Amino acid sequence: MAYRHVVGPRSWAFADLATLMAKATPPRSGDRLAGIAAESAEENWAARWCLAEVPLKEILARPLIPYESDDVTRLILDTHDQGAFAEIGHLTVGDFREVLLTASPEILARIAPAVTPEIAAAVSKIMRNQDLILVARKCRVVTRFRNTIGLPGTLAVRLQPNHPTDDPAGITAAILDGLSYGCGDAVIGINPASDSVQALGDLLKLLDELIQRHAIPTQGCVLTHVTTTLEAMERGLPVDLVFQSIAGTEAANAGFGVTLPLLKEAHAAMLALKRGSLGDNGMYFETGQGSCLSADAHHGIDQQTLEARAYAVARPFRPLLVNTVVGFIGPEYLYDGKEIIRAGLEDHFCGKLMGVPLGVDVCYTNHAEADQDDMDTLLTLLGAAGCTYVMGVPGADDVMLNYQSTSFHDQLYLREVLGLKRAPEFEAWLEAIGLTDGQGALLAGAPNRLLADASGIAA
Image (cartoon, rainbow, N blue to C red; front, side, top):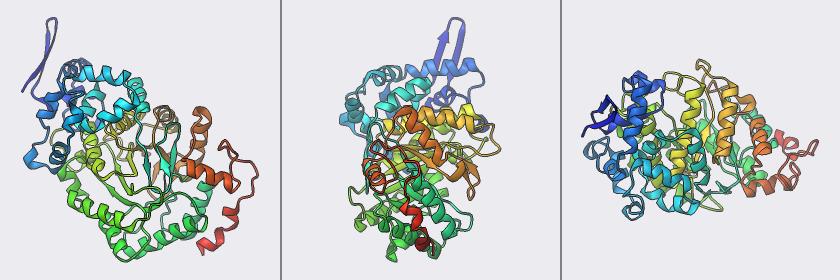
């Protein structure tokens, strides 16, 4: 079905819904690389006006990737909540934007199961940055494992203590440093340098010993492939969260070596361990715009829509954490600070609108046209938008993955400026061990029993 937009003597035609959505996407290098981006600002705005007039029912009825050829499409349509959709099914994309801007958190929670990734992506394309922030802030997605993440007025932090050789002393030092700054309530998550089960087991034991020794109300995770984690669970190793990178098409997920049945198997294995003390949200997924295009598995669809489809993969597994590593893939997909900032706000909005606990790795690679000032801007905007969690990396410079993220100090800035708290159980623990006061502020010169006990853990 072709779409057309006419203004006076000018007319723009778009061959199908996929073309229309690609042309309506705010400019980014990945879509230009794929040859699907608007050729001018005029065409981009014509596509946005045209997309605003498309009924939501039409988007639902016209899958961008055929049902028969893609299991992500089948998952989206087979799990779609028709009852919840009755509340919004009569709207156009433009009407839906107006509803979202005035909707209460209760309404947004009620319609979340009705929002497909294509609907979320479509409405995001006609929204300004302030619209994305306003609506995402009202979306409440709360998850629990050993603490409570996503409550209004809170911001969690993944403590990311990566080391280029998986040295236990180096990792332990980074963990204790991060805890001393009040980081780690989202997860203490290590990207391992090795993918062997032996190396994985050593890291899992290190995390478990530290968490148990200090009774820290958080969870640990070693971010290895899901098959390796399954093997670790079979060997009786202390696995809290099951991690996997995912994407928005069946072919791209195959490139990651993952299928939906494999994720179901891992989810069931995680539930059987019953390691969560407050809840059973034990899955952790990472995504990022451009992953489908980089795998030549994008089906001619714009990268932001495909990113939203990844959240549909995550949603049925009720994850504790999902995050877009927004600038990690590089300038081929998000060229500069402006594109990274826009993408981070889009991803956060789409995930939260779909009922997914979306965090953002506010990051960039050293060959992108971006710097730490751009990251400060995105971090601040995400804080205002109610972002679930961000990263805490020593010095904001990941020495193993070689990219720039946010530091232990950055979350302190955001808490002071916006008054954001940590997960309540983690906040209470920090106060109990004498690191923070009753308002969650770090106490200067406080005795630190974590550092005093460091040698026993790293040995």
